[in-house]
Image (tube, rainbow, N blue to C red; front, side, top):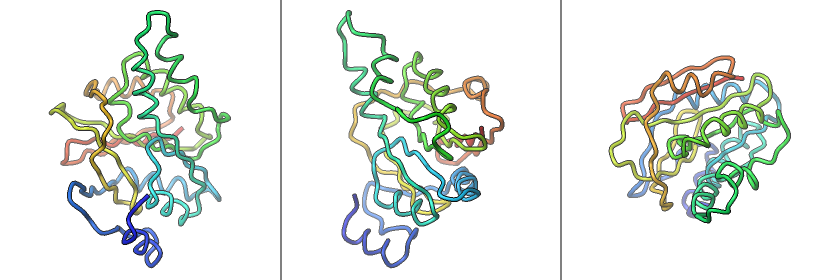
Amino acid sequence: MGTWLEKLTELLHPGAAPPQFPGRHLRTSLGLEEFVAILTEAEHASVLDLGCVWQPTVAYFTHVGCKVYTEDLFPALVEARAVLSPDAPPLAERFFSGTLNYPKGNFRGILAWDLFDYLPEELTRPLAARLHGLLEAGGALLALFHNRNEGESFTRYRVLNSRTVELLPGSLALPFERVFPNRALLTLFSAFHSSRTFIGRDNFRELFLVK
């Protein structure tokens, strides 16, 4: 949940970037800036973070007037994939049985991070459809996609302000599944009303989608 120095920084300067430590680095996110703009068009917008709970992320979105929900789907994916019994239910059934149990249209925004890069093929379309259903009309989904597969190590993300995301080493043993071609992404998220892609210099594409 953050060191005492990070907590003190947040108390004194809400939304400011905390001190940096080895193994972490920052990236400027144009997609996040668009995402925050969508959230702040509505009062008390609800945002769902599909990564782990980070105090700076919660503090930032609370500071701009949002209600924050966090559901870490990465451990849920590890757990669902670990079931090897031939009699077990299909992977999609196991994965969704205990996750994302919210009413339709419950959220103004969803942060998916790079979850789709780690999904087995049979989960990509069901998850895209589920997230679309959880968004209200005019709501936004922000996701990251790797441009290349260069032995990617699992990474965690936390929001520091409207344009800055901090990347931290993660500890889960999740295999990197694929690099999505642009056409595949457009097909996967075709139910959304509009999309914008932001290409970074750090092997990331940000996909900003509006329902």
